[in-house]
Length: 385
Image 1 (spheres, rainbow, N blue to C red):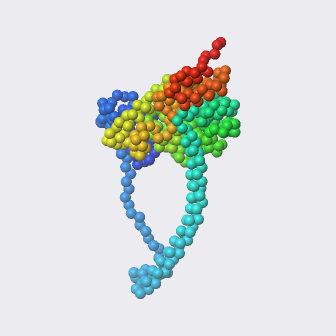
Image 2: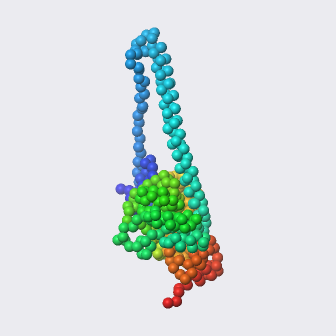
Image 3: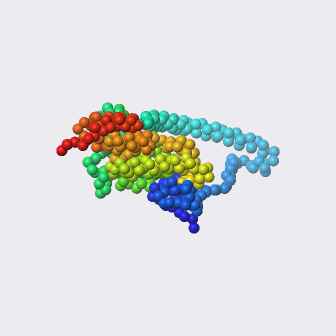
């Protein structure tokens, strides 16, 4: 019997034509495998839907007219009359379809234009970007002045997000509006995994990006929805490369580290970055045969996998999130491999929050300069009691 691997991280393929996800190759599994790349003896089940049939078309003969095959000499006239009536009906149907399609096409174009405008925000998340957690409009203003590329709105931040017995929910649109009005940089709000209604409400409120968050873990994480149907781009957390590619297939525009976002432990974040780097290196080193097996097992779009292999990195921005609160944390995360970072609220809790925020932004851009990192770290010294 073939060896099967099951993981709660596995998300089903987006298209029915793709095989079901059976498990991870060794680069995405903690279990040691006999093969350096693809598990031996793993049988991928291919779900094929084939249906054969032929459409039967019939032409109605007007009542009162004889069948042309039985009408003798009058058959030609009957056929001509029927053809004329059919042509006239088809012309009317075409005109009607054109009128119906016109507004639909217009709406589709408006959606595409609005989405393209929102997606420009992602282009702004270039190498060295910082997104700062804020729980007050005043802190949002400090983040903007310091050079942050965006803010992540946190509601009920006084330890409540970490309390498992509290029913977490998305940011209330009315609460988010205060932050949207306070700054010019993009505002991000969190929703629970799979809750498309929360996403719609925040989109209508004018939020620039939506974070499908692991912090709000009271919702079922296995429920998926098409993020490409939204104008607003999504940020999603991924634990490994396979999950990251599945989320990108669903429409995620930004990927960040996951499973440690609310732990406050920077070590877990750095471990996640190391794991992603190793998995990308292994994908780049795969042979064509191994890539084919991986695609068959994971059900991920072939074009996306090949693009990632060619780039040697994720095709979307990749951010480190969780426990990052000092210039040295930022520099280490960037050295391992990420495009930017999410900061903790704790950076605003010192004597000079403006200087701390500016130091984080500077460290993210100049992470290869140890002398500067040392100088920036003086703003984060422990205060005397």
